[in-house]
Image (cartoon, rainbow, N blue to C red; front, top):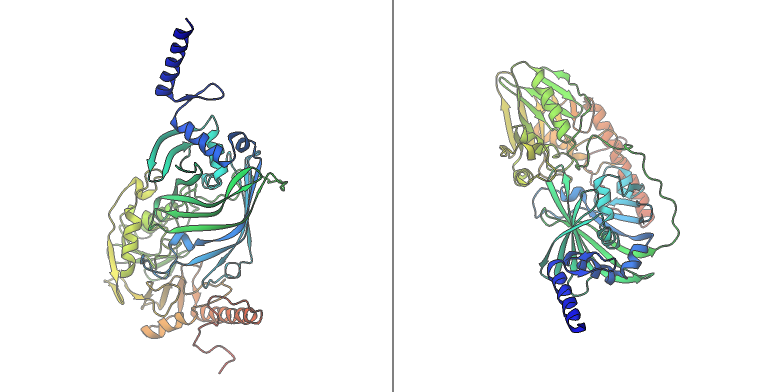
Length: 522
């Protein structure tokens, strides 16, 4: 009788193992996905220890790719990457209360026009509610290996699709808010190796980010990494790195006050640069015959269509600008968009413009990156182009392109002598002496590192300019005011360089390369 009972028990256990895995400590049936998570928890310090962790602090420094890799001199994949140094980094994750605070200083490791980023003067302080906060912040918190394994242990989390990829075992983790990440676990050590997730990006559609870990050390009964590196699936760009000086587990922390719901949110809705939601009403001011200006965008009328210079912003703003342009002259619709250069702040409207059927006009060197941007899918987080896929229509500019008919004449020129953007264009309207440009000038900059470029281009093209229409402006500005502002900004950069050199704290861009005469100099 005892032998038959033992045999029956063994058979029952065998069936349980084959059908559903092993029986867990709490009596639940555990499949291979839960077993994998449990092994990772044990490798990190034990399931009970991971579940008992209250707070984690990560202190260090690192780097991040400027504009997600879209801020380089040109849009070529071979262009050197511009980096921003992340200094004074301190992330606090309060797992007990479900909050995270990230403090850091960002210092551009290249010339920048604003003192805060040129010198790292401003310390950002961002707080996220891990239960109800913005999706990007919640997912960012889960790039911490203890946080993601702890989330995977939550009974409300769904685990699925266990698979092998090289030396990693992968499992999809869908947290209770509905977000899905893929956790990679080293098959030998059972330590977490990576976390992969998808975010919405205004320039690139669905963007896949993968954070990888290295350099594990024990801290108060928990294993934590000393190195983080996050790459994207666009050009395999390293988005950011983090070098950890110190991990702190379960030490006293300052209370993290959660943000007020809705406070600080723009019209976006989570898509970086893409906009979404309702844009504020916009209007156009007529600045010359057949030319209108609307908060950084310039609209030209031609015989049978309208052309716009720069649709700065995301989906909602681009749609608002298209609607505005289509209403300016009865019977004439917007068909063309001139894009000044590829930088992601200026090309954030490219996908929406293509979805609207507009033909892009830009420097020939930008065609490749624009085709990359507009060929990427946006299925998980549909944007205008994801909802209405359209092919890119592109007219290249080499040195000069003239747009002329019986109504208007506009010359589009390649911008020369500018170390900020090698493949940029500007527009000139001879009849009204208007210059339309992006990033050559801005009235509220602290410094100018390419200050000579503005007048150098005017003199090189032998064009007359009375009024400047800047993308980074809200109204037309007379050329005399533009030149005066540039000269003050150049002097500001020179003085900053002198102070830095005196302190033996050398800065990118110093000494300032400006060859034109300044007021009060010979």
